Structures are given as structure tokens and as C-alpha cells.
Image (cartoon, rainbow, N blue to C red; front, side):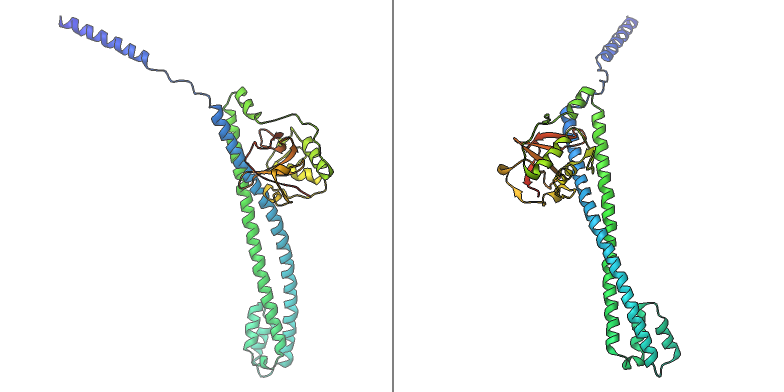
Length: 327
């Protein structure tokens, strides 16, 4: 009887184990990423990359100005070096003419000194200095001070150039990182879902835009670029970023704009939204990091992002900041 009970318990235990195993859910296949979640993340990455891109454009403008200033300072320092050499030679000749009662070694130290500061210090300790023309000595001291000022300015500008180059590298790295992550997220979606994200936005077929004067040339150029690629830092002819597109469009009208959305915001008078006309530049986000061109009927043409490229969008498809009328 005992052995029968053991066999029953064993059988029931085995059945429970089988049933239990059957009830354990199998590991589900990895779920596809939620489209809305990926959409929000990709949009955020593109926006962060564009912010970095516009900071990169600003830094390029700053580097251009700094480099120009540095060249001017270096040329000015060179001229000051030459002036100092002339005055030093005059002082040395005066020492030879007026020297009396000093040892040959002290005169020699003054005459062969290559260090302007040391030259001035040695000269001031010579008793012969009392007999020298004080104006000549003052001239030399003044020229030496001017040279020091120029050297300091040059060194400061050199440091600024170096720092700006580092900033450029950092912003470029941010752009590349965010773009790579956005592409990776898109790559995880099925083809249909990815296409839905890539083709999102209020894209419309380019139409004839009524514009007059110089604005007509700018609008015509911008509209002709619809469908082209978005590339950070690009300004045509085959790809653009947002400020590169507006810069090149207004260049067709003879208006020079900087390659920077924030800098373009200061390129002309600010226009109320109710007064917008085709050709006006419209700006987005705070701080400003995107610019497009108004084309009428509540629409803009803009280089949107690497997925959408150059397209026509609604005026308020992004956080609107204000508008400027170039020229």
C-alpha cells in the first residue's frame, strides 16, 4: 500500500511539473520600438544636432574674425619690433659717443644686449645715462611698453583661436554622435515605420510663390532647392543646412548673410507675424537654432533635418520666435 502511494505521489508530481512547464510563458520576441517614442527621440536628436551645428557655424564666424585680428596684431607687433630696433640702435650709438668713466665691460653689455628689457635695465644703471638725452631714453621706454602691449594682445588672440578650434571640434563631435544615434534608432524600425518617420512633416508640392523685388530672387532660389539633402554646415549646391539655405537664397538677391541662424536674426529689421511677406526669414527655438523662409499662406521653405531635407512646412510646425526682413 505504501509503495502504491509513493508511485501516485511521484506520478502527480511529474504531472504538476509538466503542467507547470507548460504554463511558463516563453520569452517573447523583441518588440518593435514604439513609433511615437522613436519619432520623439529622433526629433530631439536632430534638434540637438542642429543646435550644435548652428553653434559650429557661429564658432566658424568667430574663428574667421579672430584669425584676421591675429594676423593684424602679428603685423603690428612686427612693425613695433622694427621701431624698437631703430631706437635701440640710436641709444647704443649715443652711449658710445657720450660714454666717459665706465668700464669697458658695462658698455659692452649694453651694446650687445638682445633682450629689450635687459637693455633698458642696464642702460639706466650707467652713470653715462645722466649725460644722455633723456628724450631718447623715454622714447625707447615708450616703444618697449608698446611692444609689450602688442605681444600681450597677440598672445591673447592666439589663445582665443586655439579655444575656438577646440569648440569647433566639440560641436562637430556632438553633431556626429546625435546623427549616428538617430540613424541607429531609425534602423531598428521596419521599413514601413521608418518611411513614416522619414517622410513626416507638412511637405507640399512646390508652387509658384508671389514675391517682388529682391525677395523674388531669394524665394525662387530657395524653392528650387526643395527635395535636396540636409547636411550640417552645408550651403549648396547639392545639400544645405537651415542657415546655409537662407544665406545662399538671399545671396542671389545681392544680400550677404552670415552662415548662422542666430546671426541672421540680426541681419535686418524685425517683422511682426501679421506683416510677413514672401522672402522674410523666420526663426525658431530659444536660443535660436533654426531659420526658414516665409513663402506666404502660412508656409515656409526650409532645410529641416537629415531625414526630411529641404521642404515646404507650415509656419508654426516648430516653436516660432520671430522674423526678419533682409536687405
